[in-house]
Image (cartoon, rainbow, N blue to C red; front, side, top):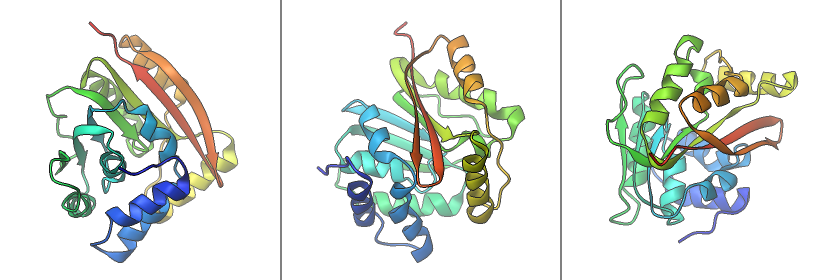
Length: 220
């Protein structure tokens, strides 16, 4: 079991996870912990949880959770075939019985019907067209088991210069013009579904700003 309480520690784990596959894609996973606060996200998952990671990319979040012994089983879904291919190569190196699975699903496909202790949306919402953002968030909440939690992380829309830095990042890496969902709108949507925000914080790393909210789903 690995300790992952600093960006350096998380990056060290990432380097052990991604040892095969395209060099640039692996390097992006190796260095992502220096610009995204995974050391703060990992403890938000209760030990032994079953996790659904929506928009999992190359699977870094679930790989880190498995390496730190926090989850019993998980499923990561993403619409990118190359990202899921790298995620599956990473998962093949995890200890037997880790229960980490990845599936390539079209963005318009329905989410798995099964419910999970934790559902995560990490840096996903700003990639979704505004007309579908609320529906995606509602569907994610519906996949959380009673008493479970939704971990929501996205990039800040303010101040302008931090938002611009993230737009430039996604134009360069994802070649996409992103659309921010105002955090108050995300909270209002989740509250309307009966959720309670039990943690809400903003974290800055280099020139990037991150919004983290943990929503508790009612027990019944």
